[in-house]
Image (tube, rainbow, N blue to C red; front, side):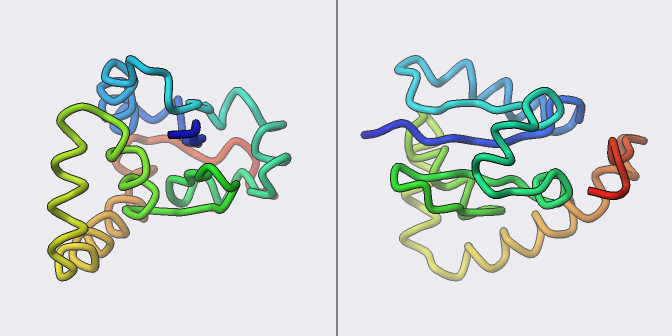
Length: 124
């Protein structure tokens, strides 16, 4: 499997809990982890604005196609021990994906309020 790229907010304490757990399971180095607060150039190269990346997780697959939200997580999860099983379950039960997208959408909408974090630059 080729390497994928996961863009995440490295300054979000809630996001970091999940991302750091996943990083520990990425023993094969199949995922390039990009902290959007530290690497604006990587975002620009991918054609993703800072604001888009802050609004929801973005993952580039092996073909540089962008997947957001739960679909992005699924790309990451299928490369990680333990999470791989979760990804298979979600893919086999199509009704789960819209439910998870809805829940993730609520989290993504309110995560800045929950953490007290703000956008680095409101113009982006």
